[in-house]
Amino acid sequence: MLTSISIYLHLDLRTVGDMGELPSTLPIFLLPDIPLTLETLWIILPYSAAVAAVGLLESLMTASIVDELTDTSSDKNRECIGQGVANVVTGFFGGMGGCAMIGQSIININSGGRGRLSGITAALCLLSFIVFASDLIEMIPVAALVGVMFMVVVGTFAWSSLRILHKIPRSDALVLVLVSAVTVFTDLAIAVAVGVIVSALVFAWQNARRIYSETSVDEQEVKTYRLHGPLFFGSVRSFQDQFVPSEDPDEVVIDFRNSRVCDHSGIDAVSNLTERYLTLGKKLRLKYLSAECRLLLDNAGSMIEVNVIEDPRYKVAVDELA
Image (tube, rainbow, N blue to C red; front, side, top):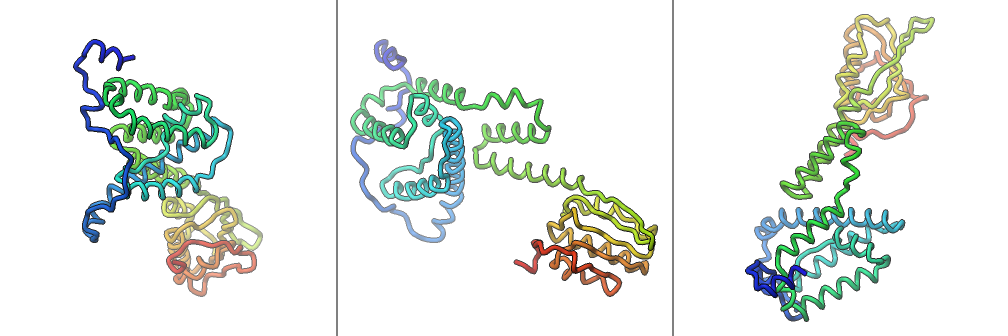
């Protein structure tokens, strides 16, 4: 309607044709006329990696939304592989890389489309419009397309997330707001990277505070520390605060039944603790510790007795396994 009004009233509006001339023929196969050197690759790589990341993210989000709306399950690996192959091929025909579009997919579903034929039909219709009706498309005002994009944004934004913002943990709310803001001011790839980093830091901080120990002393004056929670770089300080070697008896047992050593920092913390007990001439036994950790406790010496029989055979990521 806006297009008809602007044409009838001869309004001076910026149109699609003012932004460039649409092709009127089918694309032809053409090899890029660029030097195939390593220098060219380094120029293209940052932009291509960012575009590929954004394309994959939007395609995966679109697939998830479509699965939810249609109550189906799609093969997302196949979708990503197909998208990558198509983007490589389209480059030889002068085309631009693309991905699944959330707005168009939702409009397609709301119009009754359920199968892949609906997507193929939309693509063929779009191709026909560009090739055979390019003169008409060039007359569409850009303002009309802006209005369409606003309606797509309004229709695709998860407004329900605003209603539950005060009901979810503050860390999740922070990630949600931060990712949304970074997406608006930069792009989706950077926003996802920021969200993953912040979520990882929050996860590490929360798990660092979950480590604690329960102590008991038996008839033989043997003190047992039953450790709970993961032992990794973030919880090393909390782990060390659980022990006071100078106040412990001559024989101490650390039970790792409900704990796991997750990285090399955790192994190093155990090694340092054994050295503290060794300096005081006290005997320390480590139970339910992995074989990989025991091999790295080179500072424990003969004063450490490790219960091998009760130790499970779970794996720990260490430098020796790389």
